[in-house]
Image (cartoon, rainbow, N blue to C red; front, side, top):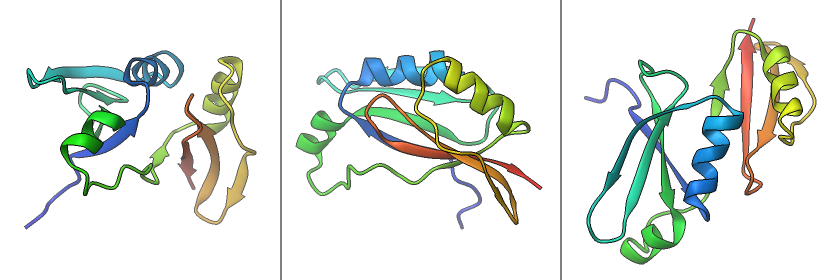
Length: 126
C-alpha cells in the first residue's frame, strides 16, 4: 500500500543551474547529492530538511540515454505557502518570471517559471 509521495523527479537541461535556481531563488535546501559512478548525478532538494516530499534534480540527457522510456516532461507541481503574496514579491525581486496572483475558491495561487521555462504553481489555501 502506498502511504505518501516521497520524491518527484525533475529532469533539466542544466543540472547545476537548476540547483542554484531552487536554492538561491526559491529557498530550497539540498538534502543530498548522489552519484552512481557512471556519470549520473542527482540532487535531492526540499523546502525544509524535514519535508515529507522532495524533488530530485536529474540531468535530462543522461536519464534519456539510460532510460529512453521515461517521460522527461515537466511534472505539474503545486506547492503550498502560508503567504503567497510575500513569496511572489520575493521571486519578482529575484528576477523570477511569475504569473498573476489569482483568487480561487480554494485559495490564492500564482505560477512561476524556472530558468528553463518550466512552470510551477504555489497556493495559499483558504
